[in-house]
Length: 398
Image (cartoon, rainbow, N blue to C red; front, top):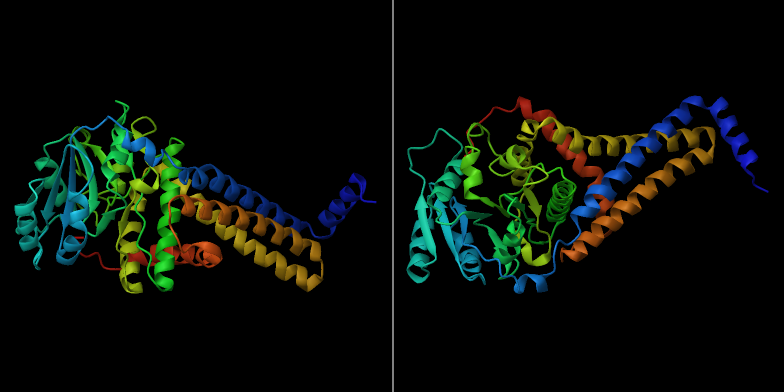
């Protein structure tokens, strides 16, 4: 019969016989606990729906909203998605599209749409302005041109999930203290392994920044679905100090301005904007390299909080493999059982949280492939960060 005394004797025996293995198991246990804490506190909360679509349709809070879109060679995307912005079910809004030096028929299409839709206003970035971050300049021009105090940002290659997108996002400003509203923008589902990587990476990142914001630690947002007050933008001097960065028109501004009091998260299916994904690995890696290049600019608390997750994840995988290999060599299967048990508990927790969130947000294609993404994505991010300093810094307009 198994008693507490027997268990204590077994533990004592292993501590004396395999002290360093027990030390590794202890580290593995601590790292696993951090992983579970991170997923349950942040990722799970990030996937909780903020409000229901039914509540939105009866909402009486409808201040004027200016939707600002930057367009750089977006002829095809404007034809596909601009109509969905102009047809929003909202009483008082405008759509401002800023042409950022396009060399295709973007201007022609905007003029055609403007003739049919009085809500559309379009302008452009002066061609001589080539020495600073172009998208930040385009956004600044669009925000200055806005006639309403509430600015709602998205991209030319994005499509709102529903006609109630504006209503959903503006609900976040019901409190007078709210200055920033964070939304989520997944990518369209396509065939192929690359698209699955993109969809999972975007979902995990989105749940992470929404979950942290909900717990009082906002650190980023995405310009594909982001809102803030016009006065907030200019009170904090817009993108001043950020114009030399390759990216950061969304996350660096949020990281600079957002706090636990002035930030709200809107998360439900009708509040989503869907974006066109990259179609080649090279394009996706370039996009991730651009996004990761600004993360060192986050404040210290944000960097520590988000860096611990991939670090402890790497520790879990590395020590699990070490313990299993050693257990096989000395044929002590209890060591392998403990290591695999900790790994399995973590995996089941992550699998459940991610799939529940994807179900709530009507995002498909996640399933059991999480194991592959869970291993590969941190390695890809690490490789990008390691090689980043060795690449020649180029002027990036987008």
